[in-house]
Amino acid sequence: MAIRAELGQYAENETGEQFTRQNSKMLKIELAAGGVQALRGSMVAYQGDVSFENKGSGGLGKLVKKATTGEGVDLMYAQGTGELFLADEAHDIHILYLENDRISVNGKNVLAFSDSIQHDIQRIGGGMAGALAGGLYNTTLSGTGYVAVTTDGPPVMLDVGSAPTFGDAQAVVMWSGGVQMQLKKDTTGGLKSMVRGGSGETVQMAFSGQGFVLVQPSEGPRYIGGDGGGGGLLGSLGG
Image 1 (tube, rainbow, N blue to C red):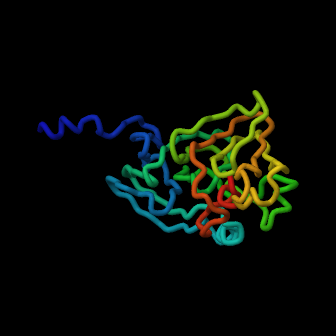
Image 2 (image 1 turned 180 degrees about the vertical axis):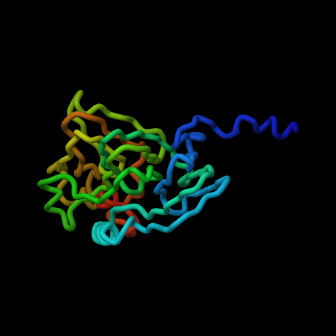
Image 3 (image 1 turned 60 degrees about the vertical axis):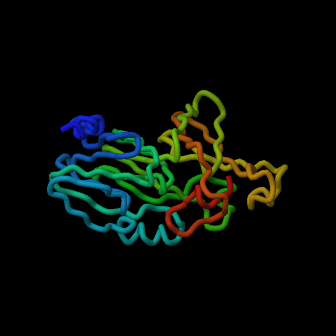
């Protein structure tokens, strides 16, 4: 058919891997390779025998942490023998394969991860982070398996070991194991800058160690705090 021929460029990508980018905005998962944890509500299509189970934040302990910190991911568990397609508001999708490794990622940027990956909510930073009400938290993913994260636009990956590296708190998406983060405050702006009354760039994230930081070209909504839906670190500070 002529119509089918015109749409041929959008045919399924076949790679044999558990996670495949169908395109820059859509993730394809082969469930025969194992179940996955995915952002609840991110399913856009599936083929074959697939079942879904609402996992909330991933157990009572994580539910309590999410309620307390504002960080975390509302999850669904998908398993079966079919193919699952996920997306999140047409954000760009990036696939990582962890091999006995760990990353720290903003919860709102987590799309899916293999069931073999462990996740938790952990306090990050020190000094100034501890002084802020409630502290600062991120979602950690560790182990061996696939992880898919989203960014609001094409990101940049910065090599932390090559030079002093800093990022806007709302634009930083994740960083790799081996990287340490501390908060840096520009005292010239004062408290007003933290609440968008000053330059808006007073609180920054300072990175050291060996590894990379992923930064998206978006700082998100221009407000402090969030709606409790997993803003975590990036929703807790003005950028």
